[in-house]
Amino acid sequence: MIFRKLRTRFLIVNLVTISIIMLAAFAAIYIFTYRNVQSDIYMSLHRIAGMQQPGPDDGHGPRGPGSGGGSSPMDKGPIDPYQPERSVSFKVETDASGQMTGKESVFTMDDELYTNALKEARGIGQDTGRFTLDGSRWIYMTKATGSGKQFIFMDITSQQRILTNLIYTFAAVGLLTLVILYFTSRYFAGRSIAPVREAFEKQKQFIADASHELKTPLTIINTNADVLLANSEDTIRNQAKWLQYIKSETERMTRLTGDLLYLTEMDDARTEMLHSRFNISEAVENIILTMEAVIFEKNLAFDYDIQPGLTVPGNSEQVKQVAMILLDNAVKYANPKGAVHISLHKLNSDVLLSVSNTGEGIAAEHLTRIFDRFYRADTSRARKQGGYGLGLAIAKSIVEQHKGRIYAKSVAGESTTFYVQLPSGNHRL
Image 1: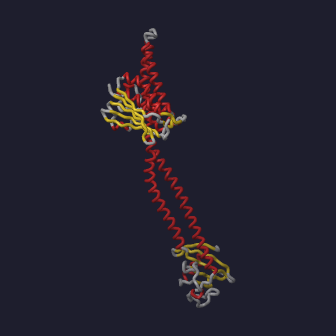
Image 2: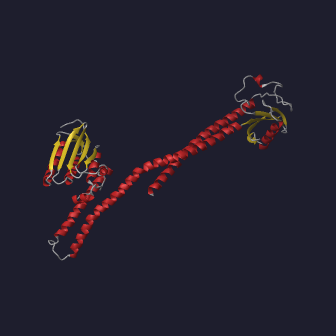
Image 3: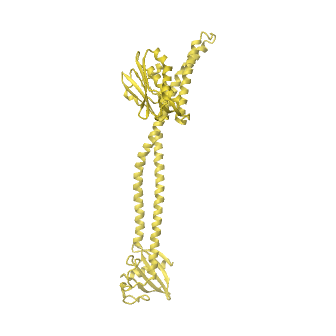
């Protein structure tokens, strides 16, 4: 539910943001186009007002001044690009009382059009204006003459249609874009939330596992404390075993909380420790020396192959911890009278550490998850060994901090090998 709401919010925010951006872009384009169209309209209107506009005589009243009688458009030379051949236009002259005294046009038009246009313009009562006549949009302007006024009319239906079509185009493009963006955003929202969902699920599992691990020692401590309180008159010597149980479980909790804190530091702060080139061959050999007694006690066959003088950049104590975790696990989970092998060799520009043992092995479905916190391939066996499932998670975190990689290979019922590959230069001590 929480991730569904998160995805919905992501979609809403994304669509609203894109809608605002598109609206602003479309508005800017429309305003720019609108101003250009209006500028062209007024420029054309003024050119018409300032030029002589001859045309065929319609036989209904005198022509305007300087009409030139029977002259034709061709008499005036090349046609101006803003002449009425591109937009229907005409002129009407009136006397001081507002009565029409003349008309000019390069087009043959009905007298009713002149009369109605003049009536609309006089009704507006301004020097310039717009009106709709017979489904067409017109613009006009007036110019004073010696005996009255001259009205210049121009049809701007095509220009208005451009602006209207532009609005429809923007609406269609905007709607189509929003539909595409909705499904695209929905897809990427799911992809974006997936890592968050995975991290959230891992955190929930981590808390549940940590609570479970802490619950066991707390239960044991509480039970033994109850036993002590029930025999409060007995001597400490006689109840030492109950105290020993409490101490043992307290130490388990201390180790567990210590590992958890260490992982937190590695993940969140990426603990800033001094990294320098060190001899990894010697570091691994030191770990082997500390584990030889344990290996001997468990009656395991042990051999190792360490290439001397190998160095890597990093923190020696952390790398030693990785080697200790892997070797300790190999010893713990080796079969009775089994074998443990450790090797360290140069691999191209890297150093490869491998730790293997004979035993039950790890099933293929577990290999990709054994580095998760609290994960155990065999829960019952791990508990007998006293593990928490944090060792390999710590090892992975350290290796990744050193820009390396850790992985495992296993043959069920035969052996398991863990590999640590760390980057290294060509330096040797």
